[in-house]
Image 1 (cartoon, helix red, strand yellow):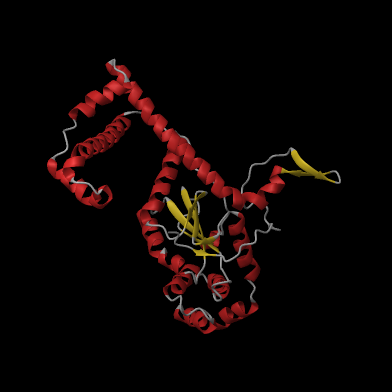
Image 2 (cartoon, rainbow, N blue to C red):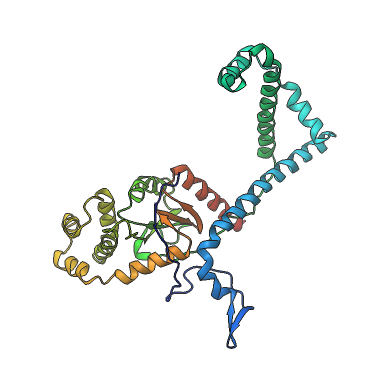
Length: 340
């Protein structure tokens, strides 16, 4: 299940400003010409980046799985060679031969679960169940043995996740703007999943204090959240008075009150200058900047909120803390490897 607030329809538009905000591979060779004017891969990239990102993610997952299997095989082959055995013989000696026969209790438990599907007396299928159960236990034991061998080996995985480098506003960063890991969040103040993930983000930042920072970018989905655009602009108005993050927290804490009176009430709670704040939200001065954030999010491949780029690695939805930690640890490890 995807814990995201999604667009009913998304139109991918070219960005007219800040064309380098989404990093792409520079390719100067023309792929077409119009009246002698060249069109290059670099011209095309902003228009297809969002559609290509899922395909690149899929390619990475396929490569990662294949690489993982290949590493395990290499480690197994090395151990077998060290002992003067084949890999198959090593597994038979260290795993298969040490696997006891399944007990009657185990067989009965399996039969009880599959009884309706089997639809035959236990006596008729007991031998087959015993064989299947033993094969399954051997498979698990082989994986555990392989994992132990990998722990003892010197392995450096250099395959990295596909990245989309997005810029961020230093005024809307929680933590060190030069942190080793930067989480860029595209969010909607009226999206319930965006509110749900807030506790997770606070926990992640506390756990990785000093090494991880969070940058906030707006992606109001006005088709389903009519107050999200105004809330995004109001947060920037609060930022004028140095209270962006405090106002940000109040918006997510009370998502049911994002109309104008609710926005003003939240400003009063923070003791913001009321006249300055109301002039700011009335002027809609930040509307273009909010829309630019929205467009850049779509260009980067974000089709629902919340969406995150962790050092450029995309993660979608209100994911559990472990999902963030996994990518963060990978990025920290890559940074360490690069320094060495």
